[in-house]
Structures are given as structure tokens and as C-alpha cells.
Length: 392
Image (cartoon, rainbow, N blue to C red; front, side, top):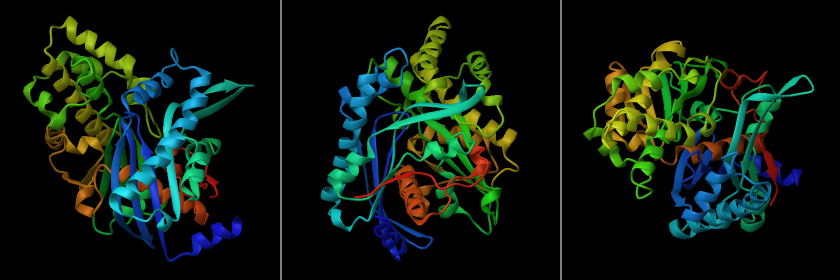
């Protein structure tokens, strides 16, 4: 096995598939890239939605009140099958030979993330759990698979997140401009790349909710008929409720200094239920409530820049589903008037593909033995190689 990994790591051009399923649990993103040195070419990408019953099951696993041990065990294997099928289906759909792929990097599906840790024998132990069994992926595809990236960083004293700063550094550092790579998925996170930066100068952290609260409200308001506010249409029609927005802005996560990460535990269903209830008490229309949640996302991003970045970036490079929300982008631009807003599309990487591409690059670094965490971002004691390798 070590011989095969060494042979793979030595290839001039490596074809890697990256798999990502985020906190929204909508489906699995699959990206196939060719990596030659520092050059990354996106060959194919698509998102494969989960069946409604599977999505409900996953969300139940994320809720401590409904999660059952036998279901966690079962759906770990099920998602391995689903992820493997997604790779095969993408290759068939885009006419990419499955055997041409050298490596798969899979983030898995997070069902619980505890960066603050819990006590055990007088020590604080941080923990995280991603499901989607990589052994199944390797077995079904016949391709060496790297997964479970977060635990090694936690073992080294970090929060296990954010992980994409390594890829952001590879893809977007500039000798001329400072850049903030802003992902707006379920959770929003930023990677700050100073001009001519070295790895140890990269700053990254979760800024707060991205689409998670907006999506949760859209589902609640439409009784599941819509899963998100397409293009920000509801928010564009609504009026922001200043008093409710001020109350939302008191959330303790927003004041916490980096390194920090968050997820469904703080901005998931319970938070959406609270916000919906508050909107009802104040007599807000559906559009007003979604507008308030949308400006909340924009303001938490902008405030995080002002509070925690060493300087304002010259450019913001957007990725994730929020990059399609034109109302949210307009709100961001009003908040950050002097920052040029671009997207990863401008660099040849679909905004929806960026996270999956990141895990392709993380997996390649793993098999090459290259440290792929960013201690300044996660709080780890030092650089470590992330991920577990399952040989084909």
C-alpha cells in the first residue's frame, strides 16, 4: 500500500475527486480536478440532492433529542454508498472515465461538532463526528479515499475547523492584493490572505450563520415547499426589523475571538424556531423576517472583518450557495463599500464547487505527507497532516 501511495504522490498531474456535504445537508457536491503543481483545473462538477427521507434522517441525527445510536451506525454506511454513487454518476454524466481518477477526498457529513470540548479526567477533549464511511467509497469506486480530516487537528489542540484555508492559500494568494475568501454555505467562514502572505500569516474562522438561518425560515414559512430564498427574492421584498436584528446581534458567538467555529448546534433548528417565534410576536411578515435574517448574515460577516481581521481586504472572493443570493451580496457591498466583491467563478471555479475542490486538494496534500491544517486558523499547536487514508 505504501508503494502505491508513494507512486500516486509522485505523479506530475493527479486527478482527484472532492466530496462535500455541508451543514444544510441538501446533498453531496462532487468536483473532479486535475492538479499539476499549483495549477488546479476543474474538470467536472455537480451536486446530487439527497432524497427527502434521507435528508430528514440526517437532520434527525444532528438533533441530540432524536439521534439514535443504531441510526448513526446505519447512516454512516448508507452515506458511504450515496457518496460513492455520486462519484460514479458524475463520471457517467460528464463522460469522465472513473478509472482516470487517482484519489478521492471526502469531507463526510457532519452530525456533531464540539469545538469547545467536554471534560474527561480533568482534561478538555474536543470532538467532532462526520459520517459517510470512506471504506465503502473506496470499495465501491476502486479508488483510494481520504476522509476524516477534522480529528487530527483537534488532537493537536485545534478546533478542527475551518479546514478550507489550506486550499484558499493554494488557490487565491496574491503578490499584489490582500483577499478575503468568503464562503457562505450553511455557516459562513472567511480566510484572510494578506498580500504576499506566508502560511503562518493566514487568518481564518467562522463568521457566523451563512444560509442556515435564511434556509430554515424559508422552510418553516413555506411548510417545506421551499428550501431556500431563491436569489434573495423574499428578502428583497421585506423590511428589516431593527429591534429584532439588534437582539440577534447579541449572540455570544459573534463576540468570541478567533480561532472559532460554529454550526447547527448554535444556529440550527432551535435558533430558527426561536427567531420565527420572535417574528410572530412582533407581527412581522414572512418577507420581513427573511429580510432581517439576511441582513443578519451580511452584518455578521462585515462585523467580523472589522473586529477580527488585521486589515480590510482589497477583494472579497465569494463562494458557496450564498454567492447566488443577489440581495445578500448587495447588503454585503453596502456594509463593505471599499471592498471589491468577486466570486470564485472569476477564477474558473464554480461557486458551488469550491468546497468540494478544497477537499480534493486536502486529500492530495495528505497522500503527499504535506501538513494541510492552518494552526493560526484552527488554534492547533502546530502543522499536522490531516485525514485517514483508505487504500483502494
